[in-house]
Amino acid sequence: MATTPSFTIGIEEEYLLVDRATRDLVIEPPEELLERGEAATDGRMTTEFLQSQLEIGTTKCASVAEAATEILELRAALADVAGEFGYAIIAASTHPIAQWLSQLPTRKERYETLARDHQAVARRLLICGMHVHVGIDDDELRVDLMNQASYFLPHILALSTSSPFWHGNHTGLKSYRLSVFDEMPRTGLPENFASWAEYQRHVDVLSRAGVLEDGSKLWWDLRPSCRFPTLEMRIADVCTTAAHGATLAALFQSVLWMLWDLKRTNQRWRHYSNMLVQENRWRAQRYGTDAGLIDFGLGTIVPFNDLLDELIELLAPGARQLRCLDELRGARSIVETGTSAHRQLAVYEKAMTEGAEADEALKLVVDFLIEETVAR
Picture: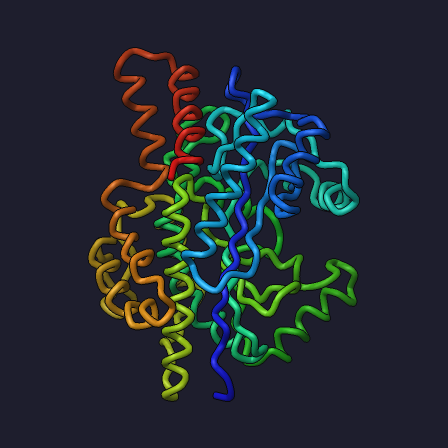
């Protein structure tokens, strides 16, 4: 292999803007808030499809620790700006009580086109995610690693879950966000391609047909970025706890290092069909870390803790090289203390046990999310 990939890290997170008094979403934030938010983040904050959503993105970072520090700074800066208007930000992939029919799209041509082309399927996108870019500079390598890394996407999803509620209801899923997002076209697990040229030919077919401009309209769980020489992980719910997000970035980066290291010795990860990986994706979406994933070699469901121990051991050499071993090992803490979904449900169930009405219990969940989003 000619050169070592850069393995740089960039993280994007989407937040919801809430009114501290009502705990509901801010449907039309004032233009001054958006201007001040952009200034306070040096242009790293942008609007999203719905006006109640905000997105931030780090710069290109040399390490997970560097990106994690930047995320904390961006969260704090946005929270300060929002607070001056009586608002707050929450890092959660769905809002416990908000209604999608009440939301307004952002007034930009890109979003207006999205709404026109996809109608109610797009208007329901009251969801937030976390995307991690890892620098893989070679096109062929990027596609090859995408093919192999798909196996690990359910593990990442299980550790990230933050969307158990929808429209004031406990959905029974740890990541209801995917149920909403999967209604869009060109979502889910990525296709398998023999080469970069084959991938590009497929994109070109859809581009010539006029259904997309470029690969940025492929909303797969994992994709080659169109803007950067990176492989972009998109399956994760946004983590309410910033440290959990750093752990997921470290896990994804270390998976790519491990797969690249195998390739250097003419080895590769065994290919499993999307049919099999999709089953684990569903289990992660439904149960999070609670019910285990399928070990395809054994043909049985293995407890998530056991899988995680094996995964950390497998990825530790790469994590040491990438200087993110501590963040990787943080995955055990996520399982022990619970993902955001677990902790949201705990707040809700405690309030209900103590006699609160359902709407009041859900407002307490929002309060938890407000506090946890800016916790260090």
